[in-house]
Length: 76
Image (cartoon, rainbow, N blue to C red; front, side, top):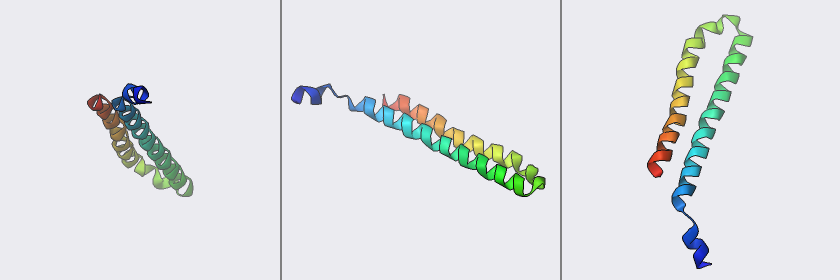
């Protein structure tokens, strides 16, 4: 059992968790933002003026995904 404990590299596990959670968060956020925007436009067709703000929020959500990739390399 001691040999198995020495073979496990916790850095690799930390990298996998960072990339997994870091990719999951922005994916959920993008889905929720897209659904909310489509709901707003379907209720009020003049709500197209919010498209620029949507892209700002999408960019912010994507930044956290890119930051997770950066953390992946920092943990290694």
